[in-house]
Length: 599
Image 1: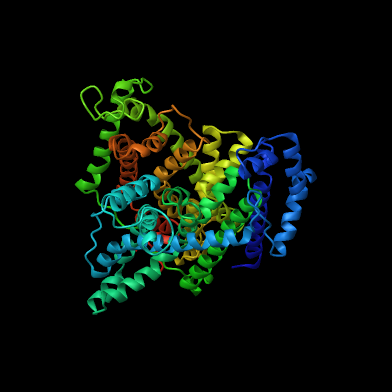
Image 2 (image 1 turned 135 degrees about the horizontal axis):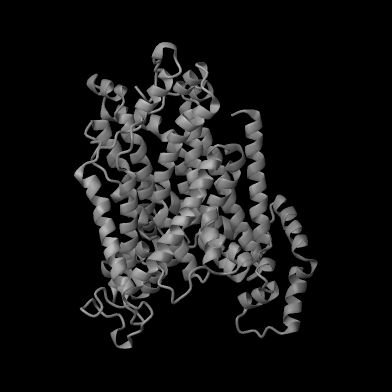
């Protein structure tokens, strides 16, 4: 990495770290609430908030000095290794932060193993030579990624703990307590990682070397290891971001299973405005994100070797997508089902309450049943489509644009991406709501702030590898202008994979918006937003499962349709690439450098 770029990355990371910690430190004052009152209520809900009691809290905590003075004192103490004491109970902050971080890291490691195990079939079939280019539609990975973590956690809790009694329902006392929360986190993460792997590995296994190695007697293990080494560098930054996201973003799962992780600790501190504990938790998450970014970048440079430094990389050719019947049928079926439910639901009243039909099963009057208040589930599913899908699409599109732009400026954007990715959406929602106030606009901004880093990391990896490829070295040698190289080679190589990645995250964005609404930071009841409807139905999932399964099924259909559409055949770029080279050579002769995707 050049010295100026390395310096830019360091400055970016330091600036992003200082900014997020400063915003967290100013949270009580940004929210307009009296910090003394919040602390008094956190310590004792029964105590009367008299002026004398509030003044005593202000003197004890030094609140009279003002937010900037408190923030400066906290920075100075942290540099000495002192994270202060909790405003709520007076306990030291550092042991609580380290304990919660250790729990979350353990949970993250097991969940990441589960996620990677879900990706193994593609690697095994490719190494054995049985991977078909037209077999996958992307729908299974999309369905896994679209599973709401809190719904999956609740279903696992009811099925495997309450009904079957295989695992304990809550707590953190031994390995058996780890299984259910790890599954709830690892299965959706496996959908995201699996889609990225499915986007990268098939093209590698179609290269000539794979067939030659197979015909020469190389074992599938050897071929699979070589394919991973070739395909993983482009998605390695994503794995680091997924790992950090699993650590800090598992608030819902940690809450369902009463796991004392760092995400749950940060949420509790934010709700009670326990500033020292919140600052310590967020600082630990941000530092974890920065460390993960440094390690993944180092591992990626190690795997790419001198080819990256010498601009001599041989990139995998884009895989050819065949438009089989299944590939075309999946988005059509999903789209028709969605439109049928939405149009039918729009004909009904989503706010009408039928108290005599509370938690009613599906019948002729209510085709999909009713919720806990007696409202028609079909009507709420239809009317909630605009709020759920429309806002999620806008957030996803804005994140995509920011990510592609940031991919060309990795030195500036690296620190901001790693920092934003380490902040759980719930914490970001609390911070934004403190400035903009609770509501859909604030929730949309909060989710957008934490949605672009994985896409930016993906774009930056593709930009770097494409710029260092051998066929672009040949383009520069024959005098191709930089703008031509950018628009005809680099952008096409980056835009499509990142777009498919963005579509895969669309259901997760919708769920993040819904979770903020459930906490009072986004859509408010009685809005028929899908995620909010899902969250409201969770307490009654045993008595009326249809109330929770209908919005979940809508999200699954949305994800399956979007990702299946993204896997349909696109124009093959190889002929355009060859034509572009031919037009710039005397006599129309084409030079196709070694490793050129056009070969």
